[in-house]
Image (cartoon, rainbow, N blue to C red):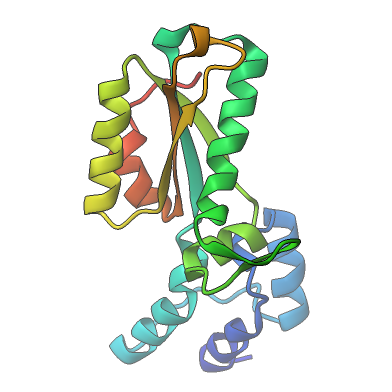
Length: 186
């Protein structure tokens, strides 16, 4: 098979190709007959076509949830707050269309790709409410979906509403890393 034929065959890979394991990618490329394809001698137009076709697929979207460590929440409370934050991203895109039906429409491609892919989620920490809101402002400036969680204080925080965490993304890993790449894992 020529380089040109292998190049054209590469567009037959499934949408989730770049979220698959190396072995799964190898199996697919073997079936397509492009194991030896190196992508050499591509024209600038071909490179642009390839990059555009795989742009969203290469970006490896993820979501990062940032939790306030200074609150000394119990492990179960942290787990609940992280779950609230991750879900709120999706709920913010939806509407109740009747008493028992919630509908989510027009999700951005980056969120859809994340849902169809590996669902990468990372939990990191900060030490203050101010840091949570600084991250929210920066996420807004970078057009990254995000959701701040304010706990009602029923089980902890002595009945006081308290900002506990923020979900950032899903979006391209590189964009999210600009905000959270230096934060410690929880």
